[in-house]
Length: 141
Image 1 (cartoon, rainbow, N blue to C red):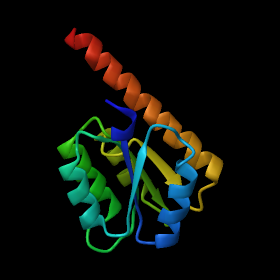
Image 2: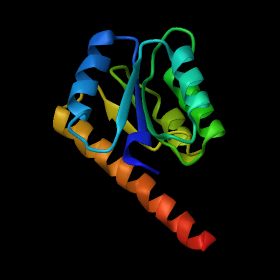
Image 3: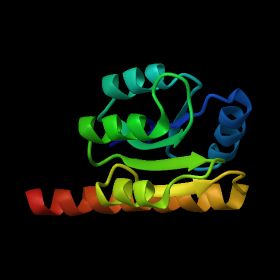
Image 4: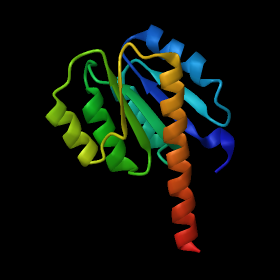
């Protein structure tokens, strides 16, 4: 996979969040960042480009398709893609744990998110994705 084909999307109905996160994540080499304020457009883009995606970051509360449902659809289309759910709202711990158990989300960030925490978590998820791909490549050989 070439570096420019490593897609990361940020999905949040607040435009300022997507702009800020895009600026921050541009410091990470080898990824192309896509931002969406509409979760339906985000899942359409993901579905069209499912093999290029490595990470989807989504807010929980959005119009149309909420973040948990979006990430669940992402995982159905491409289970190897890493996912991060974020929210400023309280979320029922039991529900969150079920989504982790079902592997619909790989990480959770509570808003407001410190920039260093965002970068650390994104780096961690990209590294995990790369390790999984290497393991599957070795198994194929």
